[in-house]
Image 1 (cartoon, protein in one colour):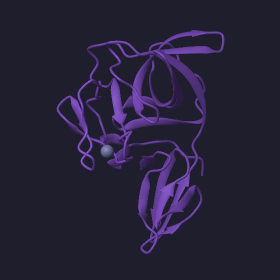
Image 2 (cartoon, protein in one colour; image 1 turned 30 degrees about the horizontal axis):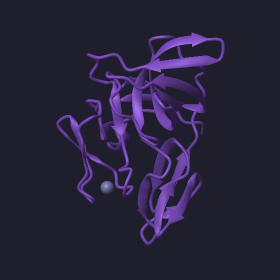
Image 3 (cartoon, helix red, strand yellow; image 1 turned 120 degrees about the horizontal axis):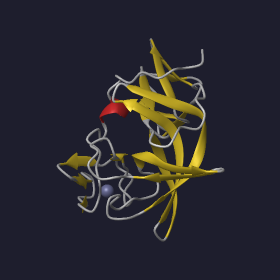
Image 4 (cartoon, protein in one colour; image 1 turned 60 degrees about the vertical axis):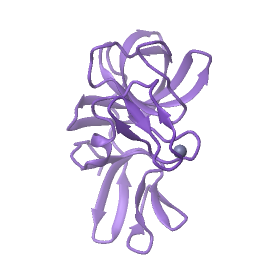
Length: 190
Ligand SMILES: [Zn+2]
């Protein structure tokens, strides 16, 4: 099974029929929310997934950057990272904050990252991105200028459309792979 993220292109509308959890944009069928992709014949749909609650301190999570205010980065945590083949997608994503610092690199709204839960105080959940862990970093990033999915070259992210190169980023070893490769297992509500 393959996990898809909002806005991800699933196929052209001429070839596929979009079902639950999809919408069309310029003749392309896209994912409306995070979930598990099902393709049967020409029909594509997205299954919502089970909730697994709030993770414990130390858990690696998948989160989308939703806002920035100075060095404070707001994220929406939507998945628990178990391994490159096991991602648990949360039915009810939650908000967590992160401080942008040297170990996080530059983070931008709409980036998807793997980060670690560093503390939970009441309803306040903080993430961090400690150095030395290959999982941690950006796993999915659109170019802030033209909206194209950026490619990784070494420790840089490059936009092949407008040519911008960003070296001030922390890129996960798993950049791009596990969200596109169709190898992820996630638990869907059927
Ligand atoms: Zn670009």
